[in-house]
Length: 283
Image (cartoon, rainbow, N blue to C red; front, side, top):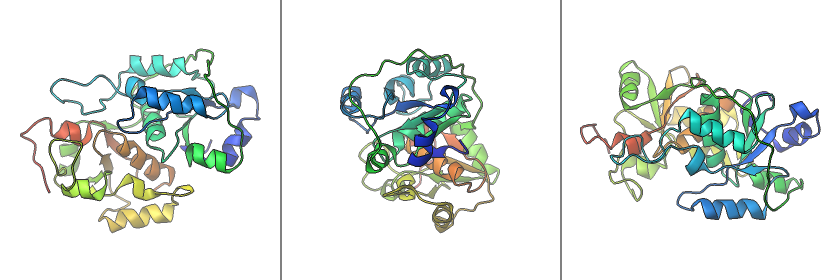
């Protein structure tokens, strides 16, 4: 793999190479509010051959804190991630490719968490299951029982921010990108979090605006979107969203297309920011 995104053609080729080079395939089927039973049922109905199901809520997020600290999808502990990745067969000597049914939100969260915990040979299938089936490539149904993996995780592979670090990042001249839909950034139509608005000084760059029918847009489109939002390609960048899922998606788009320095992620995001009523809110 040459980066955090692989195409269907690349993945098809990787699946017929030497066993030690073949990627472990992981299905991170997820949609907000769907629940693990619904997501697992979709996986059982149709998935890439040999792909095991990984639950975003159970593996890629720690339990919710009673005071809201950490947000709606708190950063998962190393123990939780290592156990979850081993359960779906992730190994230290093989790459891993995450995918979902589109538009890549669940897979991007899995990729970023894995990358933070040191898995540099982790990637996302561009276009996900939809691109795979559109290419006429094989799929299967039913449960997958992979051999247990042996991956060992170590934190620090990516830059993780908390609320205080976000404020320090902005004070030092860094740019902060809000990956939520633009109306939520403006404080309109907020139906998920109890407080509407955005972190003061943040720029609006919706993650889903960087995905087209064929998958992630190219570097030129990412640069155009970033500069159109008032951002620059030469500034230290941090990203956030509502709960750290779309933020990972935006981080993936920026890193995969080589736009600017590797972004830091505020995983707690807006739902963590508003857990402290003393923090400022802009609309």
